[in-house]
Amino acid sequence: MAMCWVAREVLPGQWRDCRTYILFGAPKWFLSFYTKKGPGFASWLKQHPWARIPLLPFFHYFAWRGKRMAEQNPALVEAQSHLL
Image (cartoon, rainbow, N blue to C red; front, side, top):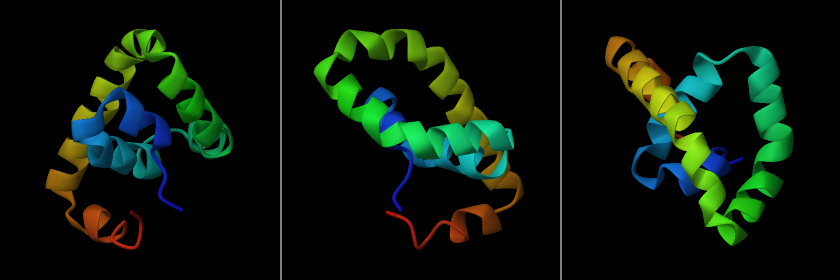
C-alpha cells in the first residue's frame, strides 16, 4: 500500500509530508475515504490537471502539518518506511 495517490498528483514534491498528516493527523473518516477513493481520483486527476488547482490549498496544509508532525516525532517517518 503506497498511499498518497492524490498527493503525488497535486503536490509531487511534498507527498511524503502529506502522507504523514493523512496517516497520523487527519480525522479517521478522511483516512478511510482517502484510502477507498484515492486511487481512482488520482487516475482522474491525471486526465484532468485543471482539477488540481482547487486542491492545492488543502494539500499544502496537509504537507505543512505532516512536516511539523515529523519534526516533532521522527518515529512517524520511520513508521512509514515500509510504504513506497
